[in-house]
Image (cartoon, rainbow, N blue to C red; front, top):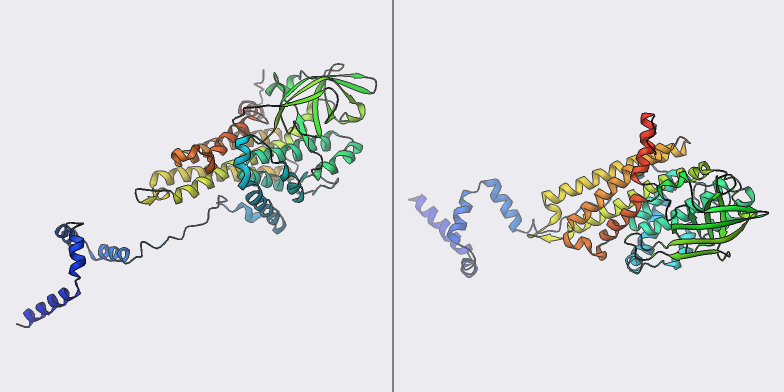
Length: 453
């Protein structure tokens, strides 16, 4: 009898706890009998999890890990001074460049007002000693290239031409007088430089012979021919022009100043990549350059190659930056994009893409880090730089492609940044030595046979 009374009391208490108005409203939305059947099939653990979710535990905003593509913490190996400079450049790119970059990229215009702000960073000619240059490591030069490329490859390219190619040509091939005259003002970005090697009919074959010619007449040289794809050329104050000496058939370097008679630079229009970079088609028509403006320590293409070897590592780092920017943009998007009631970052296939991207990126980062260590130890060879250029630009293309893929249709919209990374990656893949030419350089080193024709 006591069991009957106990059960009756439990039923009474159960009925007291039920809100029959809510139960009636719920019955209009779901099959209550089916709900009770399914609840009855659950074990204690399943029921506890369900109750936790129903009480709101599953609705609290999940605290997500920070978005940081330095997965192996390579930045942790930097000195406090180098880390401070890295973060200084990162902040500049995020606050000064990121808000304006898509607008200028879309219009194919250069934001000239940033030049004094870049100068304030005091990073131009970062690895050079003297002439107002910082004299920091090649590792830091690479990190700066990566930090710039992480936000925009066009600005990274502008800086690379100025700090590496143009200033580097004078630093490596110029006389002491030429270095003193030009480098301090270029370091402060008071003078902007360009680097004229590629020609309309001579790209990868530059080492085999340039079509731009130089003929000495007394104390002056007469330059004729064209250069193509020359970054900064439309507004540069100092143009480094490489030409073939008609007398000895060797390459010579010349400093051609803005406004020099016989020098003309026309902007190359309708580019699909690096649209902020003002690439020019340079035409030299009986352009007179004094012997004083000939780079005094350049006597053959081997001297040009010294400059290219020094800067090619920077292109590999730039590819790392481009890939990192695309990956971080894609990761942020997938954590915010809701489909089927969940962030798409929680889906297995999306996570697979993200991990593939991060794997490529981490391999690239560790490779270029070691590359710069070799350069700082004066152990860098052509094949070291070429392998880095080949591998990093190939992996970069894969990363930006996957970034666009996980973003679906939005991946082709400029406002999400990844479309710009996809386009710019194509230019980085090709310039400063194509994949094929750099592969032949590495192939020659590992086999002992040259496959160049």
